[in-house]
Amino acid sequence: MTSVTGPLPGPRSKELFTRWARVEAQCAGYQARVAWDHASGVVVADVDGNTFIDWTSGVLVTNVGHSHPDLVKAVQVAAAKLLNNYECLHPWRVIAAEKLTSVLPPHLDKCFFLTTGSEVVEGAIRIMKRKTGKFEIISFYGGFHGRTSAAAGAGGLPGPKKGYGPTLPGSIRVPFPNCYRCPFHAEPTTCDMLCLDYLEDAVRATSTGSLAGLIVEPYQGAAGFIFPPEGWLKRLEQWLRGRGLLFTLDEVQSSFGRTGKFWAMEWEGLAPDLVSIGKGIGSGVPASAIAARGEVIGTLGAGEMSSTMGGNPLACAAVIAVIEIMQREHLEENALRIGKLMKSRLLEMQEKSPYVGEVRGRGLVMGVELVKDKKTKEPAPDLTRRLIDLAAENGLLIGSVGTFGNVIRVAPPLVISAAEAHESLDIFAKALSLL
Ligand SMILES: Cc1ncc(COP(=O)(O)O)c(C=O)c1O
Image 1 (cartoon, helix red, strand yellow):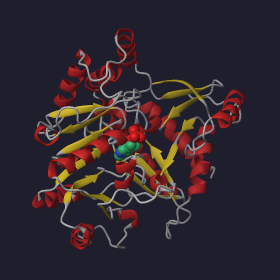
Image 2 (cartoon, protein in one colour; image 1 turned 180 degrees about the vertical axis):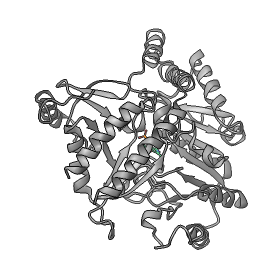
Image 3 (spheres, helix red, strand yellow; image 1 turned 30 degrees about the vertical axis):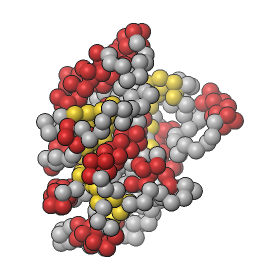
Image 4 (cartoon, protein in one colour; image 1 turned 135 degrees about the vertical axis):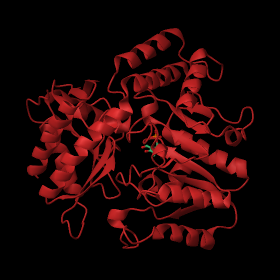
């Protein structure tokens, strides 16, 4: 199915890369050297006619598959009818909100549409402060919530804050349970989640008594697809409830079936007060939303939240189409089934390869962490970049994440079939063997 006929980048890609470097700031991360032309389902074609299986989904965006015909049609119909009317009402906005709240847990009975993930995180932080009248927000080392001011401030990675000066006061950041690289050098089987005790200590030592709430990802995305041990999120939620703090779950990348359930919060039956939603909700069309308990989001009065593009007809038509496709095609079930198949083969590769330190994840979001040495766990970002190139040369598009840039993202569109999964895993195994 995939076909790469010459060295990469091909001649047309090369020409585009050269022109691009002349006119746009070159601040994107490391990607395979191909210029995309079109894509369908899980297959991407570049401008030179090469085809690849895609394990990136953009960046966990195209959950219903690239350019799903029903999504394309819905967007075309909306575009021909009404492109923007700011806050004025249109039917798509009402239907999109009805659909979204119908797939959310019942306590999250209200939503509000914006455009990007960072924007909904900003909004959620604002609501937590506004509702409580307090300003301190707890967040986690390694967290990524976006690149705007409050979102970057709540994040626990230095990149988005570099050269920016002091971030928002009132951020209390604590270690996330990264069991592969435990900051306390503890063992997950015996530690009894020591990191939760540390959270208590950190708050006691640093809070001025103005705690509003907490923001956390169900698994850390940008830090390297780090999944907390089972039960940790539930205990964290109980800790918050015991103190009357608000709980924002950042599901910008973990929702819309990615982990094998519609929402990642379903795995532990969490009941956050606010949920930030992005990426897969528009499956390629810029859209995002805050979901919240009505009583919490109701703290905002008339004129207190809006955005030029938020809830525009095109975005809302996309949200409606995406939810309908997800339900009709049972995509979270497919993510679970194919995810299991892929994970078991990736674990076999971990056994064989001297460089795969850990394979982790669930559904169709898995991280393959590359190390120079399995004992020392020294990160291998150079090998990771080499693997991205080798995979592309053999017909597979992968990307990397991670605090050390050494984790391969395994996150194909949720429509991937078993045959496509096996074909792409064969390519990945071959690329690994060439390192
Ligand atoms: C968990 C999480 N929150 C927020 C964001 C920011 O989203 P955006 O890039 O759409 O602003 C991201 C993006 O990767 C994310 O993964």
